[in-house]
Image (cartoon, rainbow, N blue to C red; front, side, top):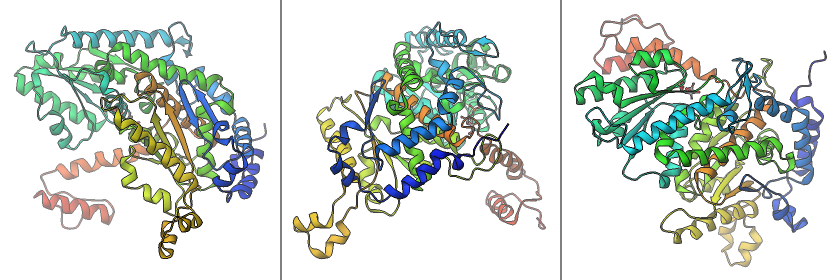
Length: 550
Ligand code: F6P
């Protein structure tokens, strides 16, 4: 069989290259002047989200060619394979089924011939029953005190989603309860999370897919000591720890009854797991009913992604636009700017989702890619960022496409702030697109010497995403939007968006260095000269010796 064409050899890619040369200097001012209806036309709606993509440096031809690219790369077929439970994570030979986590009861999704949907719902029911017991005081601490504090111990995908979701949906949680998150192995993280808490009122959720992650296991051991020494009994562990994991054997070894373990499956990637049992802290915070609403939001976007035609398919359009800037304009980064303080951890969440998924250097056949893959994702909530780094986006020398995310309805008691907040979403998108020309400045009376400094070229692209309000449902929809946009990009690039081999090397090397730092006897070092010198300096500072010749 003839080898499939490499990405850069496909007709659509070549056509996009030619097209890029033609439109790379066309200004958004021109595009809007040529088509007065552009701002209404280049929009799409799905699952309650409105996407205005008109302020992108595109024409109808760009969209046509990007959609052709998706077709030539088999994005829709790959999407259907994912929804059907095929093992599209080929380097780990695993299905990729975060969509099964929110599939309605009665749907059939099979992995190795077994329908996984009933298992998903069994875990959701177990989570709901447990959450209700905690919330109604049927599950109390060892001394009989009500649980008032819930601490999720986990890192990466076992942390970023729960922390982001709690910050986003805090209005839906009982203000008398505290939810905290311990991820970093730096002991300061544990101290900060627990300093003002009573161990007798504190429940730890140990969240780790593998239950072997160094950070999580170290923090879990510290938590165990904190509980046992305060409550003076090993038996307290049973009442103050539950686990979320795929590794029942390790959970049991820790001393947690596996009846209090909430399972998930190898076909859920860590960064795609916030709506699995990894969301247990979220469910306790917002309650099972609101958690179900969040799942409904995910589900609505899944359906939209599955059936909407490409030209109206939000995740498909956003994924393809990201490719347009990354691979043709050479943009290195994407800014994520949620205009909602409660979404302040959303950029960090999307960093893992996108960069761990699409930061890949070989294609599915193991060949080095000859094109750029995943962009660098970063961002802060608006309006904070405007008074910090937006200057570089407006007048710097780098092209930074940005997603501005806003909500029409405020959730805050101080609703008067909302119009001011949202005016900034619209103003920033407008300013980035259209800028300020020298002639306008002159007309407004700017002194001549200042004009070059005040000119804003504009032509900075944005997507504006509007939702009604920051509810559990809207959050689910937004997360699924980005999950599927990441999928679209990975499918075009022909990479495995679901493995993460790159993070392994550092973990292995740290395990080798740990005893070299800890050893109280004179230690020989056999690293490169830089690593040796750093370790020597550290050991000296801690009063530990290194053999002279190393
Ligand atoms: O950082 C790598 C990683 O494997 C992530 O993909 C994952 O989310 C995280 O570590 C935590 O892993 P675990 O849930 O197994 O503790």
